[in-house]
Image (cartoon, rainbow, N blue to C red; front, side, top):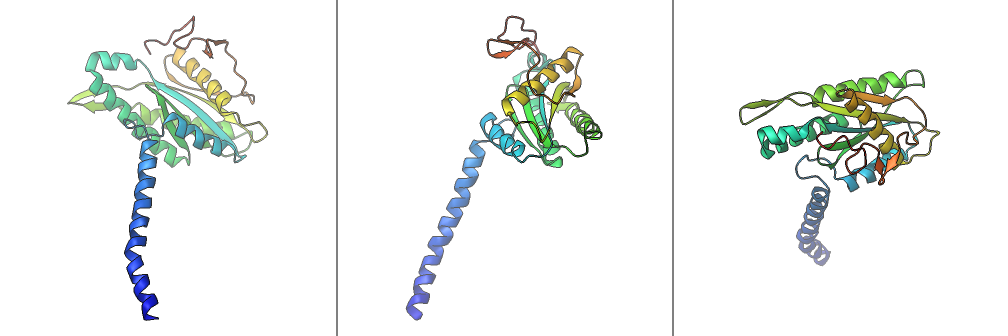
Length: 224
């Protein structure tokens, strides 16, 4: 018995060490999948979690958003100020997503995406998404103070509802949310929600991207 207890006592520090090492490795792995500037999930990590959310078979809303005239922030205040705006935006989206049991990520530049559950019947779920969109935009458009200067923030958000009966195709849903974001941007900012049940794209695809996107023949967002 004493030999067994001695062996267990000797092994305990080693087991504890491996446990600490495992926690450290998990934290390092998670940190590597976080965008270092915004703190949100990277595109790959976000898409992995978004697909899991959509696969649960419950009602969801998929959101795309970007910042209006972000290039002008960099040109006027400098890239450090632009980084501060991205950092603040990431923090605001992260809090909003957590408050709504959702997941959010930075896709690149000033472009972000999110997925949240939505509650209610066919008749009331639209109001639920409208409320989430208003709350998100209110949070995003708070000014950012950098180096003693106030930087106004304006955003465009697009969303589409996903229903239980519809096959969950994240790429198609993001594309439709992107189209709604484009509509909001064309109206000067704010948000737009797709009421259609289908997630098939409405805009033409040019060079593999939604018409009007940078890199297409009719690009209109190069300075957004």
